[in-house]
Structure formats: C-alpha cells, structure tokens
Image (cartoon, rainbow, N blue to C red; front, side, top):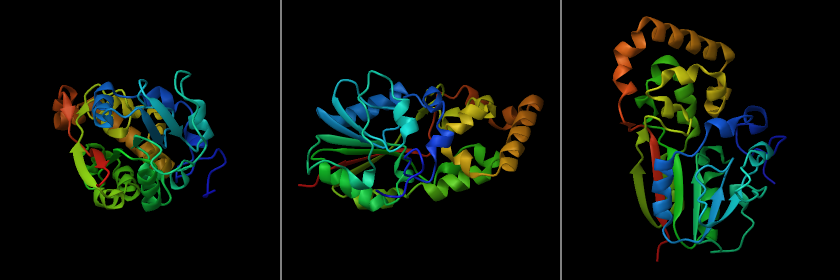
Length: 260
C-alpha cells in the first residue's frame, strides 16, 4: 500500500489528527449536490473515491465508497454504505465495473494524480466527475489579503485543471460552480460572506490547508480579521459580500465522458 498516516490517510494531510468534527462543518451543499447528481445521469452503480465522511454521495443509487482515513470512515452517517479502506491509485475493482465515478475535494490529496485518475477511468464505463479548485483562481477570495500563506499552500496542493483533464481524457467539460451565500459545505470560500465563521478554530480545522501553516500565522490572521470586523474595515472593503447570493470563486466541476 502507498505511504499512509497512522489512521490510514493517504494524502499530505493527516485526518487522524485534524479530522475530528469534520462532518459537522463539511456537510453537502444541496445546490452543489444537485449539479453533481445531474451529471451522474442514469448511472445506478457509482464509485466515490476519497469519499471522506460521505458528502455529496447520492442516496438513490448504489454507491461504493473508497476512503483510506479511519477517522473519515468513522464519521460516515449510518444511512450510507460502509467505506472500503483503499486509495485512488489502487482501486480494487475490475475494468468498467461502475456506471459512473465521482471524487470531490480529494484529488489534491493523491500521491499520484495521473495514476489515480487512470484508475477511475479504468473502472468506470460512464462519466467521471471531479470537484476541485482551480489553483489559478484561489486569490479571488478575500482571505488572500489576510492569510496569503493559506492561499499559497492551497495553490501548490491543487493540481491544475489542465493536468486533471489531460489525465482523464475523453470528452471533457469544465464548469465553474457558484458558491451560495449560506453554503453548508464549510470549505474556505464558503465563508465569503460570513467572515466571522473563520474565526472559529473548528471551522478552520475542517479545511486542511490551515494545518500546513505555522501557528503564528493563524494567530496573526485571527487578530487581524477580528480587529477589522470590530472597527468596520472588513465591511468597508467587502461588506457587499454579506448579501451577495453567490460567489464565483475557484470551485470547478470537471466531467469526463468516456471516448468512443
């Protein structure tokens, strides 16, 4: 098995350490889930790779989940299937076994992107759907002015959209996904109009990028943002975001249909 952390996490982030409470903050956003479900089409047998605590898994299809982290597997709700302990680079199923496959917020954790995507394509006869962030568009978010180190780390971790599409092959569609103001899925950009949420340590912990910066940087961020919220500086610069229904940031959906 590829190199893994003590709880089985296979990427650069150790979810055995940072994953407690993840499912409380990283809940599926229904409007994003609806887009994913649409592109799954009529697939009945679906593979979810890097499934985590089960966000975005459809409940009206037969889903097989793969998740290497024991911490993440333990947080899956009881109505979802038990996840298999495996990694994207070594999917334990035969060729074209699934009607469709999905991978949300996970490709940046894979040790070998090309191998993982090749495995997804190998075991899937229909669409492969990847939800990720475009590293070239992360700096659209106001967090770049408060914690540029976090944005820089995310930009290094996320593979380019071109790298993903090249590895997947087939007919490709890339969509920008609008993030709603009250987004239930607590990734960093979900708080574009609710800055106070990022003052919560648990909310930050649910976004793995924060685990890669020094504690001093996190403390500087909290002090800076709290001060600007109290004296009105943040609202003077970004206050319109508090009522902006959607934010078009770095979130992307990549859909690959198998070439004929």
